Length: 312
Picture 1: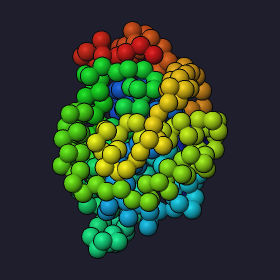
Picture 2 (picture 1 turned 120 degrees about the horizontal axis):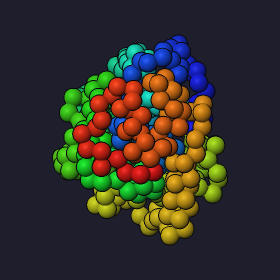
Picture 3 (picture 1 turned 90 degrees about the vertical axis):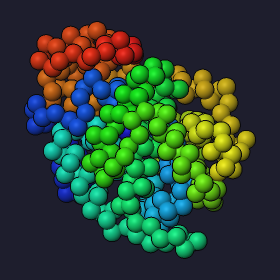
Picture 4 (picture 1 turned 180 degrees about the vertical axis):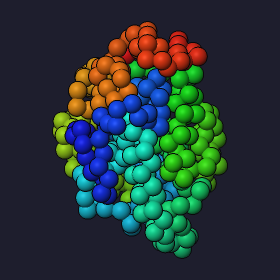
């Protein structure tokens, strides 16, 4: 997703390059900074997260009945992507301002599912699940389609995601992948298949939600997203063999993911945020050792476990 140096969200001007020196919600040596720079991982992981959210009837009704996704998938995807980039790389003050506006909008979202179950968007249980699915989706997509991550890095990603989740109102974000799986087990009895799941996947496969992605990747991305769901969850949601990931899908997406992980764009949020913090624009594309040297040179303590930084 292409984002300009300056953008706007609900009247808030967003500048990833300034103010100079202002930290983000997460540190530049976090696993999030490494993962979020990859558009293939964000695309696949974001779709997987939505599928897990839509499995829960209250979230599904809240999003489908109160958002613009089904009528404006491009605009909705772009706004969601902008907020995700801001939460990871943006100045903390801007991130908190925009997230606060998102939360106030969500405060108006309430209603009932077709089965009569009432919901409100700011229900802590639902907020916890939405935050958790985003972390799980982005993390597992990067691990499977870009570069494998160590178990320690996966758990660090989940643990550090609490800093973002709490800004959105989540109270209990899972600190490990295992804790996420336990959370999913608790919610699974409420999961159900629904036509909206397939309507959503049709939008993804059509390419309307991501017009900048090459057309041949749209169906592969949809299948890759389904592949991130545990087998028993996929079966429960009736996402059958039509969504099986093929060997060609894996080859294409793996190649695209690795290429995207090496592509440096001086105007992208990760590059601009690095410069804002006094680091080279290609900081995230350098070796782990060089990243640690640069961080130490600017006065930030080295991470306790340097070996957890996997090479790009």
